Structures are given as C-alpha cells and as structure tokens.
Image (cartoon, rainbow, N blue to C red):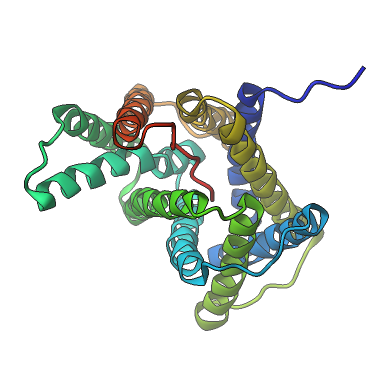
Length: 305
C-alpha cells in the first residue's frame, strides 16, 4: 500500500517545533560565533540544500524577478540578523514571541494604509488587535528583561516588523508565479552574502570546533526543513489553521527555555505570550477575511525565514 502523505497539520506542528529547535541551535552556536557569522553559515546550508532540490525538480536558477528577490532578501535577512541577535541576548521564548509579532505588525500596516489613503474606513477590530499585541509585548518585557537586555528586546521587536515586510514580498513573489524553492534559494544566498560581508567588516571569522560546527549544521538543517514543511502545508492546507498552528513555536520555545536554559517562569510574561498569540491569530483571521473580500480565494501565505 502507498504511504499516506503527512497532513498539513502535522507539517505545521513539525515546522513550529523545528523553528524553536533552530533557536536552541542559534543559542548554542553563539558560544563560538557571532550573529552575522551564524546567518552566513545558515545561508550556505540553506542555499546548498535548495540548489539540490531545484536540480531534482528541474527548476531553473534564472529568475525574471531579480529586483523583487533583492528587496525580499534585504528585508528578510535584516529580520533574520536581528532575530538571531535577540535570541542570543534574551530568553528563547521571549525572542521567539517578539519575532512572531509579524501578524500584528501586518495589522498596523493595514491601519496605516487606511489612514494614508484617507477614504478608507479604519477597521476598529484591527486597532484592538494591534493594541492587544503591544500590551502583550509590555507584559513580556517587564518581568523577563534586565536593563542590559533592553536593546536586545527592541531589536527583537523590530525583527518582527521586518518579518512582516518580508511576508508581503514573499506573497508578491508567489502571486507572480515564482517557485518556492527558488524564493528560498535566493533568500539563503542573500543571507550568505550579507552575513559574510557583515562579519568581515564588524567581527572576525572564528575557528571551528566540533560543538560549534554541529550547532551551525543544526541551525541550517532545522531552518531549511521548517521552511519546506511550512511552505508545503500552506500549499495544501487551510491557511487560517496553519496561521494558528505556527504559534506553537512559542510554546515549544517556552519549554526549551525552562528545561534547557533554566529561564524563570513569570506569570506576567506567560500572560503576555498568550495575549500576543490571541492577537496574532485574530490579525491573521481579519487579514484573511479582507483578502477574500478584495480578491476572492485564499491568498494567506506563510512567512518564510
């Protein structure tokens, strides 16, 4: 009997687990490498795996949309650099939650667009969603971040905003017919180049140890596998279910934080995480409803980092 393909739900749960596991690997790799150096090696591994996949699928490396890939790479790699920086300096669950603010930033962008256009009515539900999300941020940052970590917290929050911008560009590339493997390939290439240049200018390339090399390999493998699982889940599953399940990454990161790194549990920070998850799911639902009204079929797509 032929084996049944994994369900979209299982793929999304697995992707969320792998992204949280990548965060653990980033923390371990940070003992031997700088954040930009980790991004560079993550790009090398991701690009190599995507090149093999493209060869197997017969997908051309030539793209008719180089400018769109450039802007996607610029925003996505900037978000990744900031996220890795936040992971190194913050409790893992806190850094993961701040990056998952992207859906709430999308609500902010929609509100800003309505204000700038003037004639559009501002959806009060989006306003409440954005306010709830930022209240969740305040709850998280107050008990879990020392004064010396505040900068990492702000960078983590900014990484979520840039991730939302990258999401817009990934969606645009998908609507233009660009294959997912090629999108991930050029994003990985951008990460390799940007991470290498930034390391050369601001840091130094470190010698490898077995522990460090294994951590780098885990970062690349976990991230690439999670991207492919998430992309496939969105291709065949229900967008709103997938958008909700991806927040399991915060729960997995929370368990890792407590069990592996001994981070303290604060009720206020847990309440803040739950508030952000609820606001993020609500924002995804409102965005989905708006897209169905504007364009008809589902266009909600994954954010691919």
